[in-house]
Image (tube, rainbow, N blue to C red; front, top):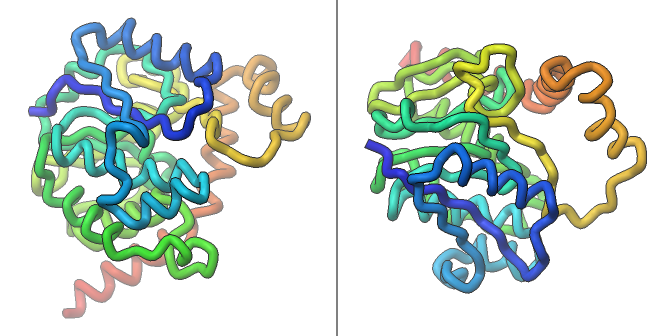
Length: 257
């Protein structure tokens, strides 16, 4: 069973934006009996992983957090949340599993909400992979640019019963995969819309244009959050089309060997 622990990562010394504070307050509201743990450069030893250390020193905090979230889940178990996850209801009914993930798009896994018991074999595999990665590979293309891409590919490689397509899946080791409407995007079905991912990019180094601010803030008000989520999902899916082809090749290879 997944422990009632919420892990999140906040690196650097910047204050949390108002929206991040609102998100954390939503965790406290809907998950009052969960232990909430912030991980940062002071309580997680960056020297234990070179990829995370180099990313932190280059102020690429999101990449460092990719490693930290997996490590703390594997050591302590619980639920990892990105700091811009707005929780809508209790996660209690999901805890009776070995682990769970959710889709971000129809063809990519989300890493904003991840849950696991301690000592998960798949997460151990991911940590082993990160231990061998060179951060410079992000720039030269030898390392996947996002953890969504890396982990989607590893899910395809590791689980014969994992398939893309935004389905609800129950994998062979007791891991559940949920549709994107569970954790990522708003939904009319309030029974299964546990959280929404605001995609604040709180650690981004580039200024946000006026147009992007309009899209993020006003467009959901004009067309409604569910319709805005559908647009985001459709646009985002285009970035991961290559993984649909990768899945087909892997399945064909396994079927012929």
